[in-house]
Length: 120
Figure 1: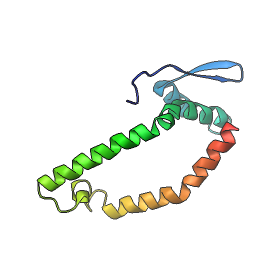
Figure 2: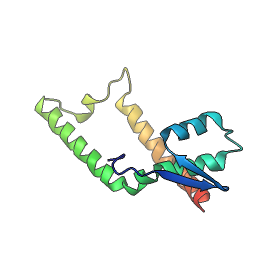
Figure 3: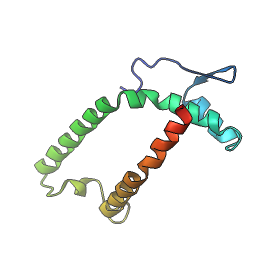
Figure 4: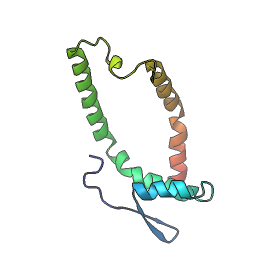
């Protein structure tokens, strides 16, 4: 779904036209100056991800159906808890996951404010 009907993303910035795709974005982040080119980097990142934002509800529904299917599969094979299928303490524990969710929830406002500054 992310790439279906994927049209070319074009960013016009300071009189130049940029075709924003994964390779170009990767090259930009690898070879440009993070301070001098921060506005261009931010605008390109927003342009590259704008389809994800537009389709966020569709992605959420797809993810929800995947989770429901995984829960049903776990129940069929006798797992008591869904998280047993994905987390183990040796690699990435469930507590690590909860800590990550907590951290991102607390700090998502910073990203939202950053987007407002760049867009306006």
